[in-house]
Image (cartoon, rainbow, N blue to C red):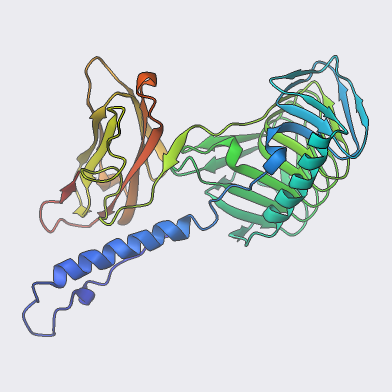
Length: 377
């Protein structure tokens, strides 16, 4: 979503002199609108809270049946049903088996809450029955009936690792053989949710991502891989030589734009430096640009910087001995007129114990420059 500022709002009377405070007022208005744009784009960005179900890679209401050497990373449980078969040959790694115990019962209660949360969210857009070939940005996507995938679906977080994707299927979810979900722009499987009002079927040799919250049953056919969770409220989970890995969100943080149009960690901003000695600042243009420029991350104890332009990953730089500056060249002449966003995900050395940060700035691609662009940071 883009917000354009009408330059007539700068307070200049018709035929009169421009008040000295006009540019400042326009700048404040621009900053406020950028914050509004960020909030609007994040309206549906919250993940679905799973409660006790978060620890489970597989959870069923009635039965769990496995064939072949499936590998489950995370807890596996069934409640209120009692039937659990096929382990071994299936194995559970980094998790515990909960068969009709208090932990599984609580997880089922929390699953019901999570399911209702996902189902009750306001829709961002209505989607077609088959998502193959689509590229979607964070939001809540709704199909009144069944939902399918017969190829590749790309989910683009646009540089925000905390952004969420929620899919609401009014009936079944059917994933065809060899289909896949591709995560780009910082998207994480832990923030992808599939609320299914009936049952879900994930086809053979497919590579799927996200937490499946099914009212009835879930089946994974031969060779299917799930980077996520298979959570069935009332029915069974059926497995056949599958790999299911409970996703964990990377320890990254995302911040909205600051009061200036260029966002990120700037001098004097809380979080730009911490007691561990690590720091990161993002420098780049904040006004209109019409010629190539460089954005730079400057800091200490940085091990890796990944740059994104409008959510598309452009460059990943690993530190060299003593390096404190990491840069990316951007050519706005190859971009459309209007607002664009650059983000940089910064990772720090293990010794610093500092969490990764995502820094941002916003600039305008203009048809011609009205002077030298202003840089921040």
